[in-house]
Amino acid sequence: MRALFAQIGFCLFLTAGYVVSVESWNGAVFVYLGEQRSPASVRSMRDYSIVDRKALFASVHKQMLEGAKLMKEDGSMGLTLGHPLMKASDGNDFACPVQGRPGLFDRVELTFLGMGISESGHQPKMIVEADCTSGPNLSQLGTIWIPMADILATEPKDQELQFYGDQPKSIRLEHIPGQWPNAWVLISVRFFRQAFPDENLLIDAEKMRETKGKLISFDWQAK
Image (cartoon, rainbow, N blue to C red; front, side, top):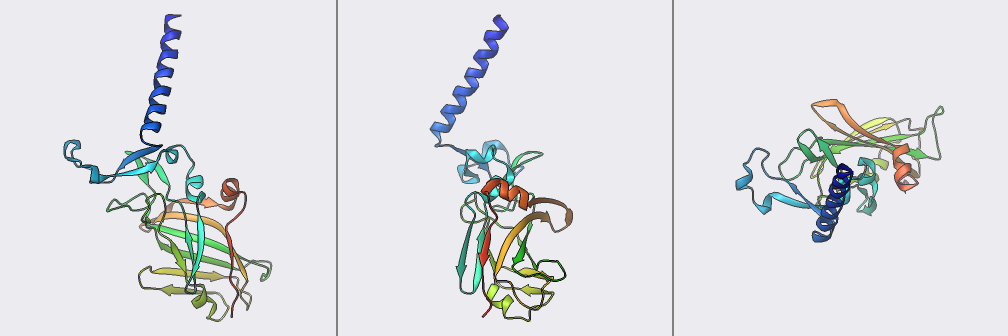
């Protein structure tokens, strides 16, 4: 009986500690972003960043898709996704590089299907690959801009395009039937390391539907 009371007391202590910590920091936790080997005694508050505590308990695809948004600007479509905080061998780490820390991956690949047309039973596919970066808010990835006006200005055919500038990216187009679709749907997001592409994390359409109830899509008509 004494052991039972001890276990109950321990559980109540943990629950109270959790509630106090959440209320004290408005549901936030601090994630260390400084040098991984620096002694704890010399770490400063500048080496830490505040992250929503919910990220510690949410699945990777839920973190990535909640708050995802599309925006259109200057002939490009921008996609912003959440930045997953993941479990690593030495604690929690972000999926992509943050403030000098390498993160678990350094590349991200977005795969879209074109809607309304097909070629030999295959729907058009657009695969966008870019550096994986964090945004100003560490809970978000840097917005990936897809230069749709430039893509649709080319001949509609299977091809690979390279874009340089502030955000270099490669775009591979497959099963293009001589015309461009008017709508695109995101069907997968893949994180990987360029040096080890087989070590990757894939979020497919099923997991995206599970989180948002629908897939992310956008319209863009060729002029």
